[in-house]
Length: 230
Image (cartoon, rainbow, N blue to C red; front, top):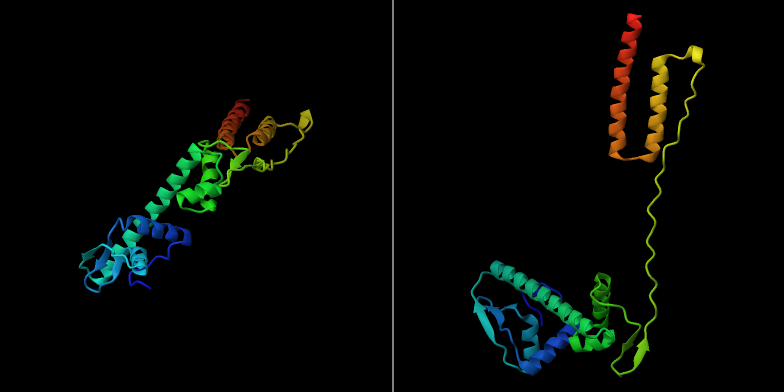
């Protein structure tokens, strides 16, 4: 049985079985949507399939839409319904875990109509956010208590080491050969090298270097003016 407007994959087996049990026990709670123009099911394909398999009358509502609009409606209704179903299941599982964290994942899965993998995933999420504490043992469906293997805490990875630029030593010439301007430049450059090793990669280091360069230019101008006066 396939549907013209069945754009989504079939429901997983466990969810389909839960829907089937619900329909057999309580009937169809939400009428299916049928397009009057072609008689195809727009929303409720699985409900219609279950009712047909068990000879149950399936309530319906009809719409009168062109095929393109009916397809758009089908996608929207199916997407909204499936998202709501998944969220409702997740909330139901979370509530049972918070109330009885010592119960096994399989036991809660059986009561919530989902899989034990889904329960385990929700349990991990709740433990990560601190909404649920870890338990050392759990009670199974047979009533027996079983200890859980200890989990190794995750070891945080150390941050990568930054490679610092090497210190460049600039030896000073003999006193009789020193030029005041060149000597000042050498001192400033040496101190900037030391500073960059401490503040490597930080915007403040670049801003300070620019400020020192401006200061160097100002001092050079001052020294030249002093020599000219002499």
